Amino acid sequence: MRRINVVGTSGSGKSTFSRQLAQALNYPHIEMDRLYWKKDWQGTNDEEFVQKLSEALSVEHWVLDGNYNRTRSVKWQDVDTIVWIDYSFQRTLYQALSRAFQRCVSGKELWPNTNNVETFSRSLFSRDSILLWTLKTYHSNRQRYIEDMENEEYQHIRFIRLCSPHMAQEFLQQISESQEVKKPA
Image (tube, helix red, strand yellow):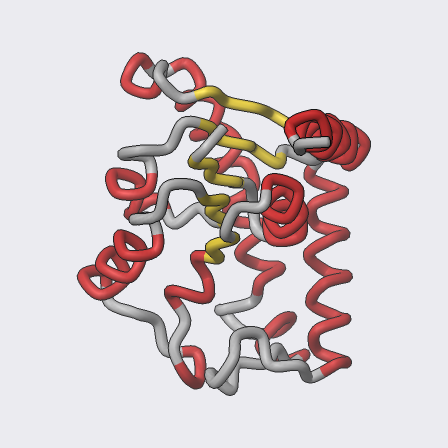
């Protein structure tokens, strides 16, 4: 595993898992949301986004965190492993709600120098609500990744499907243990 894309529905825990995986492997962690979002919740146009993504992926090893399916031709060009965080709908929705609540209460800026903070009105009551997005995309994301796993175009990619936090922790533990074996005595 040299180039890994962690995918899953919003709220599934992609970012947390990706950071932990990158740390275990001692690889750079690349967060697609950080590349996409500009100051005051302004999105990046596709051309600029693809350029930023291409530059970020130009290193030898990485853990990429995010879906952004319109960038698939760039991000999956050299990927060798897809880790799909595929928790149950109830778990994912709960995590999305918990995360939104924690972020709203903390008022912490999500990405440096963007002024992007989550608020209760934005997270819960707007058309940009992360909860609404989770509700709208959970089933279609799941169907798309199932189809991707069976698609001949992607047979060169190793798909790892983690269906519970326990599976995710076991996977991270195996990675950590294999890295310990590789370290010189």
